[in-house]
Image 1 (spheres, rainbow over the protein chains, first blue to last red):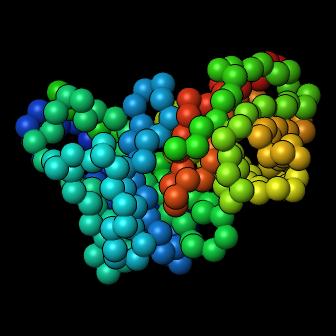
Image 2: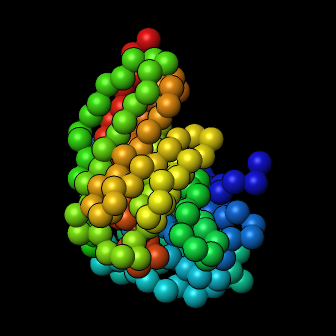
Length: 114
Length: 108
């Protein structure tokens, strides 16, 4: 399967712990996005990369959140000192900058903070 | 951010066409209209997109009003597998701004 993959699919952690998620985009895609989705809501944009450059960050992305995309391939999203309010589905998407920005989403990582 | 308005939910019978409406009165001239759908516990799935002209693909058709202030996603023959949340989205500055979407229920 050559779609977007995310790891892990589920993560349960205790408040105050750090967690890291990984996203592998579709191989020829140069853009990579992170979104967060809480129950009953649509996904909310967090940040995006074009190649290895992080071009935009939402104000939702507090200083406890950091994302990287070394070498413009896979990306990681780290949350430090997790809080119960961080419990959500974290979605990754990728796209190719050509015309409309059609994004292809991964299955998401479900984070539960106890 | 450019906004879209969709009904909260709709219901359809299996094998019948479904028309999912979306209003986007604040659309600008270069905004693409995207439709995605999301099944429970899955990531959103791309359905179709358009700019000015009506579009067809293997999944659906997209009808765009002449003034571009509204659009309609058409599923030609709904199946039980089409039951999902459907999002109408305007592409805004290299990101997709999702609303709450329309929950589509399909009855057998």
